[in-house]
Image 1 (tube, one colour):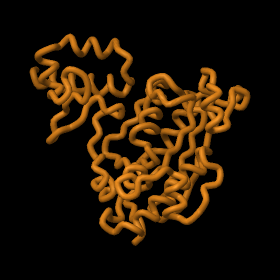
Image 2: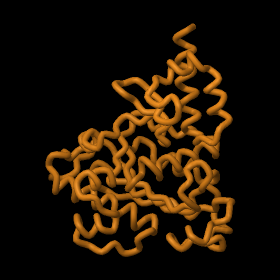
Image 3: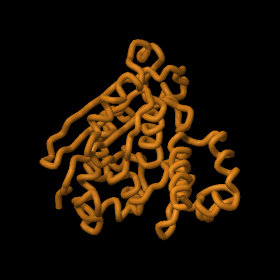
Image 4: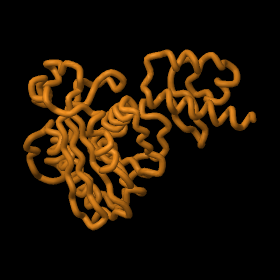
Length: 256
């Protein structure tokens, strides 16, 4: 059974200065875009993060300050990347919890609205962990019977992720062979914010942290409106603040 696409899907992999979505930056991005006919297009960029790359991060991906000093900033290539991702569903390995949240933060810092509404988000790690519990290199060996050469290189990882998903579709008929069926299987079709400060329960947006965990967001906005100001001033991801503001604005419109 082959993966059936009704629209292109873009597999994204980032190499970064660290793992803090709010504060760290991209140093390399690779996107492997698969068209509905199986045609593969690749876009890869080395990025100057405008902050020092810690030695620990360089030890993982091999990218140093010297290598990025003459590279473009993310803001300089943001429109090009956004256009490449137009009309694409989005995939990756642990992408829903790291690559996409950090990418959206970078778009926000560049002043670009990157809208994920209507896109399907396929996290191949989620399928893998539900079925096998392994790492990407192990997944590549397990599903594709290949050694992942160039692991932690963004293009190699993104390409391997696509090949793993193709193999998963072949191996697990119960997950289906469409992006829609895979997203439904992984249970991640309805993301509110990528940091998961909010989640949907029976279609209702609720807090997923702190003293209001489990409470509807609209209820908290009504009972404790100052909580909005507290979050806006706090060290929360830009995407989280944007989603909180969207919910507030909808609430105000309903009152009007």
